[in-house]
Image 1 (cartoon, rainbow, N blue to C red):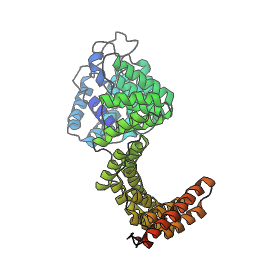
Image 2: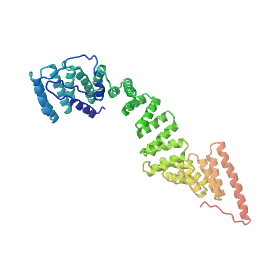
Image 3: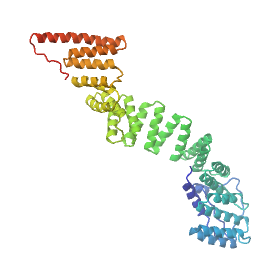
Image 4: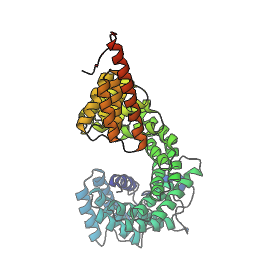
Length: 455
């Protein structure tokens, strides 16, 4: 939506430019062309300009309008409007076409001040159509009408008056082109919008001036809607350089992702993260996933861990599982165990317990490995039950529980689905039988050999 306050500032400024001075020409109003004032002093303001006699307000009309000027300065809008209507109703006060134009200009301004945009528009339309309206006043009023119709969200009419203004104006500023580009965008005239905003950008760049942030902003949106991500990246790279904001870095990271420039995406997102601008769980976790994908699990783990400490990332089963995985992949097994133990308590199947069993085994914590594998079997739903029983069997061997180990390996053999999977439990069964028998013979001859220590 075009912001009404912007229109208000423009029109209020315009209205202040025409104080009534008896028997003098009313100064030209600016209405939205004010930003070009310095240039307009050097060049003709409207096309086909001809030398013409200056018009003036008569003494009687001027005196009446001066009184209204006083009430306007005091913001007595209703009183000013009543006085204007009395003048308009009189056939003797302001008789000429030019004087009538002044009344309509004042009326438009008062209605605008009262937030009565429809009546303000009616008054300004009369100015445009008036026989006594000077060309420069008509030109400025065309632009004002474009602004007012935009404020009323009548974008069709806004475009019409702005196009009329543009056809007649000699000096068309970048802001005016950008404004019409916005209107075209609202009307779904996307190609015209893009052409107009790019003309605005070229207009300022040709003068060695940096385009305004909003120019590139609209251009970015239009190219994004065309799925032209390469051009969007080029625009965002300008924005992060000249108008640095973390939202632009985030968007740039997303666009790098669309173009599969993963390292650039990672760098852009890291910029945002390092400055504490990722404050949503999805953003933090996305960052962690990027590091996992880039083969930097330690950084991923640190990011998730910090997110949990900052209460940004919930300690849910899924998030804990990812954190545990990141610690494990970075070979920080103690941290992995701690996190996965918490995650396993929230799990509705035995998969995490099975993973924990394997980690415990790697750490030489055989009794815990056995118990974790047993708990995994009890909870059920393990994706590779044959592997879980293999871990259980290995832990039991290390605990000198050979009969129990053979039992676990037999269960692994039963769960195995192919020849390759069956190969390992068979080998371990032979080893457990051989080693168990060997140790038993040593016991039989009097050697003290540690017995089963699973309890």
